[in-house]
Amino acid sequence: MAKIASSALAVFDQDHTQNGGYDSAIDEDSEPYFIKLLNKDKHEVAQLKCHQLQPLKNLSDSIKDARQQLENLGLPLTIEPHDCHKESFLNTDDIELRGMVNLLVLLLMSYHLRAIVDRFAEEQSLPLDLFSSVYKSGYLSDPWNYMTLLAGINLAWFPTFGFVLEKAAGNGYLGDRLVIFVEILYLSAMLVYPIVLIQWVGSTALPATYLMLCAVCQFLKLTSFHHVCYDNRRLLTRINDHGKKPDEAVEDLATLFNINERTMSTALQYPKNLSIRHFLRFLLAPTCCYQFVYPTSPSVRVSYVFKRVVEFLFCYYFMWYLIAQHMVPIAEGAILSFRARNYLGILMSTLHMAVPASYMWLTVFYSTFHSWLNFLAELT
Image (cartoon, rainbow, N blue to C red; front, side, top):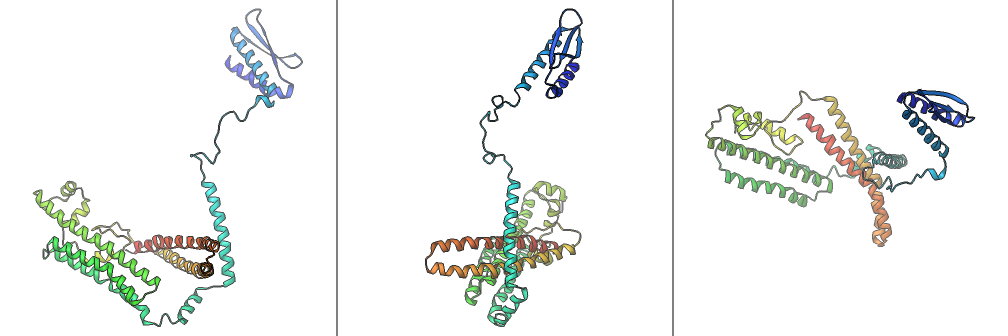
């Protein structure tokens, strides 16, 4: 009976708008009971029968309710779109704005890309122009300009001294306290060295920055190297304090001291595990954390290395273009505003400088932390 009632209601809803609606009438005189479906002219179009009266009454009530709703459908007072309090879509916390952000980024990139292309077409700048201007300026022929490079090469004496120091400590020639004292002295001198050289030579900003970066990176690398070696010596002491012997099962010792089994196997060979080849690989690898064991790939991917080199060269050319064609002209134009104390002009110059400066920082980040470091990681 439920299926028959559903079918009747479906027919009623479908044909109401076409035929003007249906009505119903129940014949309750005798069993079985009948319900008649009447059209707008009160002519019978269908008849249903059932041995129970209540299902027919329910069907008749449903038809009347549906007819009443359809009659009121579309009337302004029957529909209230604003039936509850709602926040704006942009005020809700769970709104997804990723599409809008992507659209804004694309608009911003297309606008600035057009400006870059227009400026490039006007100036017609090529990388050869930069090299030609630098060569004609006499910068490359001045011996003092190579002093910063020599100072960077001399930084190699500090890791050499650190490696020899750890070898001596591992062979028992020096005590831990004396080793730590010497490490503090020479690492401090390593940080002071580039500062003194930069002031003495009078280095320009770019080579001086690279010299300081190399010094700081080597400082962090050597600090980690000495820390790991000191912990290696302490590990051997702890093994002896537990009554263990270094020649026992590596698995048991690794489980006892919560150390990787492969690392434990290498640490037990101290100081023979301090090899020059591994130390040089650590100095060139894009990491400041010294380990006895590093994960490696089976072979060097030549195509991957070539791609990173091309990206690195393109990023540096793009940075030169931003500096020469955008940032320098903006800075030169801002000098007049600074001299005249035109604060509105200073603000406009700052806002104008923000766009190429942002691209500059993004390019530096990508070229350094993606192209260059992945290039080194693939080779080492």
